[in-house]
Image 1 (cartoon, rainbow, N blue to C red):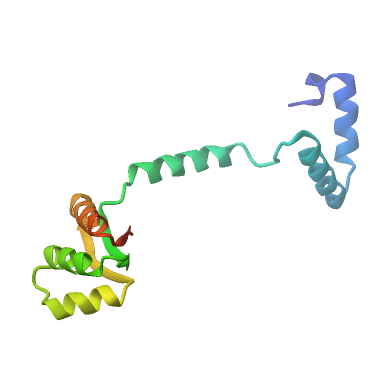
Image 2 (spheres, rainbow, N blue to C red; image 1 turned 60 degrees about the vertical axis):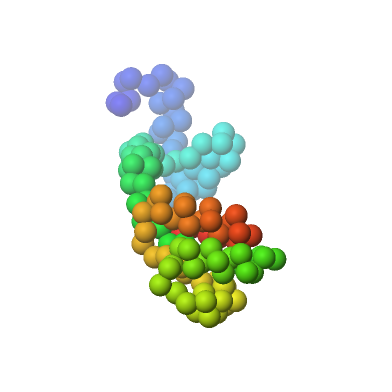
Length: 131
């Protein structure tokens, strides 16, 4: 914008601002931000933040880790559920795994497998996290 496009009042204010030191401009900027609730961010920055947020939403997580965080009150049922999820475990191994919660039961599995395991464990009384 050139000086001719500004009204006389705005032109006078612009000339005053041009004469400020860097510290005075920073103080003025801070005052205006607080007074009017605006930010002195560049215009391109919010657009970049929005596009990054859109990309993050598009990149949905595809693999999950199922973590048994607590066996709850019904430890026996949770042990049985763990053995259903991990059939290669023996009874003692499953018991140790449940008693030493938090434990990762499944790593890098698809969402539907993780949700199914979570449902089995929660139905048995365990507390489960998907990561």
